[in-house]
Image (cartoon, rainbow over all chains, first blue to last red; front, side, top):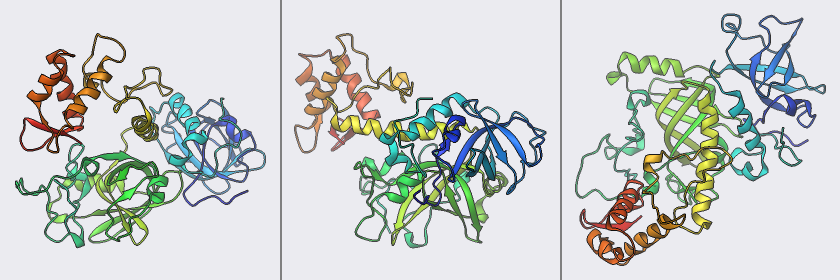
Length: 133
Length: 285
């Protein structure tokens, strides 16, 4: 797999992260935490397409005010494990009014090879035709 | 150093309160803010007065000029890059006494340095608080500034740095990048010089408010495109453009005078027509 450019990471949704095409890559997931309380060292994350991903908290902790603001959306930066879970590095607070539908459409546009010149490899457009999920 | 700007950063609302000034050490005394309305000031091209929505990848990969003065940066599609706006997250920052240096990324590839000059003597509490809100890691900011190239290293001299009011600005910005680029492509390859926004576009928005889309023409789908083409052609008749009355006289046999005047007003507002020797003479930008 080609090395990712510094600062380049693809933005994914739930179905993309489970596809296996982004394993071992650093990616971005935007969505909400399903729960403010982790189960062991993992927590469920609801992605922008309502798909769910498992987030592993070995490298980072949950955001501090997650319990106080359960409706807040977050951007998670982490590495995709072989099983499709995400090892969390950084959680960035977004806003509570973020439109997931539009964001989901936007990331599919980013994945379109036609627009790669604007969004770089980002660590990788999907090699197959644009995802239509 | 004269960057050939009519104004220093007075664009998009002139958000100096958050920008901390746009002076650079090399600018000397010539790049003064709001620099006077001297009649001898040379007109700058509209490219230099256009703010382009870009990604970090576009900025880091744009072609650099041969000279080292930072001017003349260009995107692969031919668009010039002077003033840019982008949305990115702060990866790290360095707080110095005279400036703050942000290292920002947006996931498209690369890290861009953004320099914000400080002017503590003239800043109010609000400005200081705004800067404090921006000076945190992993916070998304909207940046407007001038893109420079110093020995191959890209740098943005920020005129405005603000935290996002909503994360939807991230989505909006990326879509705006695509929209601007595709509109530019259509303008190069389309049938008319200024193609109409498609109402059934993939993204579902047209990008321009209805009021500023230009005059409606009841003569059919291509009516206003033909009018626009004719108007623009009429203004290219002479080196110094053409007078408005001459153009109306030329075209009044084909189009109503009011439609011609409306089209001229629209094109002037869009920056496609500019005044030359006087207010009545316009040329094509």
